[in-house]
Image 1 (tube, rainbow, N blue to C red):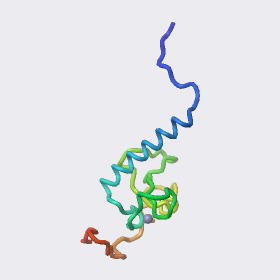
Image 2: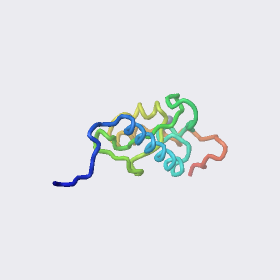
Image 3: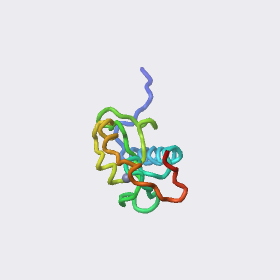
Image 4: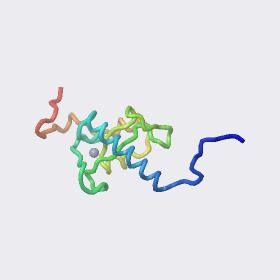
Length: 117
Ligand SMILES: [Zn+2]
């Protein structure tokens, strides 16, 4: 008789949700360390506490959407507001780059913000 590695026979939504939340939390931490606390699209600061669906909450944006073959590799991810992420949608990466707001047109006056140029 063949011995096989036992795979779960049923889709376990609890285990799936737990794994998804864990992956999201880890990615958020790594992206925050890499990119800081500003939105990739608009350049404004994000909130990492409070309601996950408030306007300034941080979400993970896939530059190449998962629906178009994108992955969870860090090179494909960046941080965006909920609204900005929704605005970017599942457009191709080149179009998303064009949809970014021009950060140089609006000077960043926050304390400790990187100086342009
Ligand atoms: Zn934004």
